[in-house]
Length: 172
Image (cartoon, rainbow, N blue to C red; front, side, top):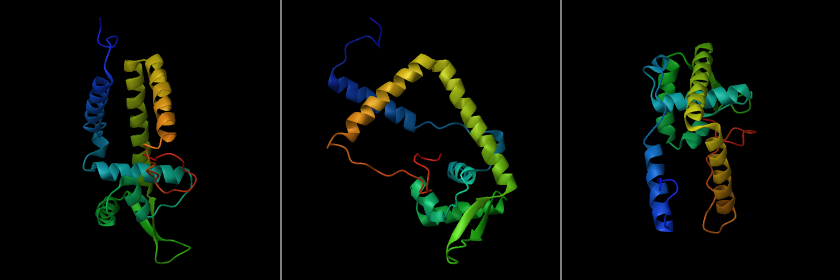
């Protein structure tokens, strides 16, 4: 009997799902040579800003901190780095002169768009390797798990939104 067809106990299922989740958490897409010198947080921030730019939304450092779940001081540090590298600009918010909005420069827009294309290609490669039917099956199963969790008192909602109005899914 092959491994996918064997009977597993609920305890075994739990252990295998936890182990697979940990395997996935240890992996992230490799940065392309064009991303050389950027940290993963800087790349995430660029993607977040690109998403906001597409929607014509402004982004504050606090939005980035909330989305990436890092401290405002950490955000400040990598925004300074992105600004020095010419990828972003900071401007005063029109509605509140004490507030700063972050925007992409042309160089930042170009790099962010390239990153999105590369991530999309990586995903398409994964779909080709795993198979469309298996990916559809995964979606159905994950939807069932989400439906169960959302209807259960054993789970509580946690916000992972980027804070950009009109965006109902995580940006990056």
